[in-house]
Length: 340
Image 1 (tube, rainbow, N blue to C red):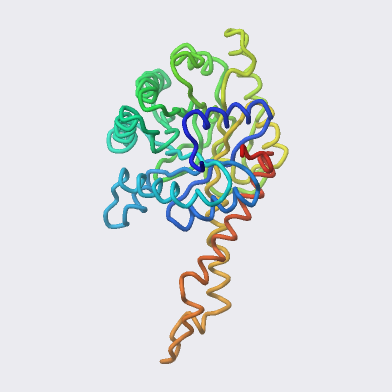
Image 2: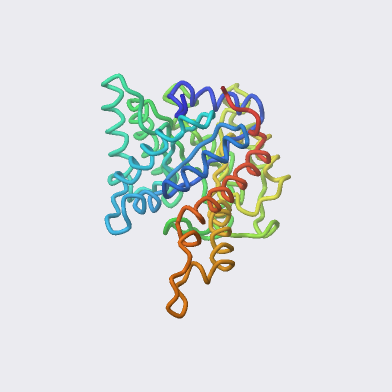
């Protein structure tokens, strides 16, 4: 087995929480990035999560087609086939679906998965994220409650966001201000609306200064201690230690110490996109600069097929991205923790 079943995905999360480690959740946009991500997990001997955003799904369906459901299913099908050979367990996830995209993306996927479950099959994806950070918390939680019920029928896990991640991702932009810090009151409102597992399992992205995009270490003011404060406050009301399964968004530029503290406070999934995009692209640029006379047909010459063959630079891109995922797995302590 390579793609996690619903039961195995729950086991992955339980193991991470108990063992104080987190899974890299890597955004993918193509068959090459799927391969690179899985290769990286295998090299790290870490199970992991690969995820597709709305823009990534549209791109995967064909840049002139932009069918986000079709692209999501295509990437999932490719991952399901190739992951069989790598010896690690992979969970499939859709990332950052804002309210306006629910009806054209996540709700149709959940409906398809509910039909799969009725036929006795496993759902294509193991989890879906609803990003309600751009609407009032009350409305966010009302929609989340509805999606949690749909997720139950589809045997998937819902991921929600309580608070705001700054910066820009896939056309969704948020200001960098005090709204980047979730409060204990926000956490309490969440469990009152969604429960603590009895209505269905969900992952929660509580924000502690997170910002999407490219930043040097220290440029973003992260406060991972907020996660411990919220876990303690909500746990006291529920009589349960560390009640939230937490997700770390906007981790580019985070220090090793910030990552470690976040994981210690209950983070079991950390999204990685910006850094792996660069790690994929950098070797390609290097190859083209070093081999420009072979890649280009300069002054009427024929070039060098071995230089411009997509496999030549594609292998380098995949290796570069895989190496960055190994680094992430080591930072998140999931390296060497694979299930089987």
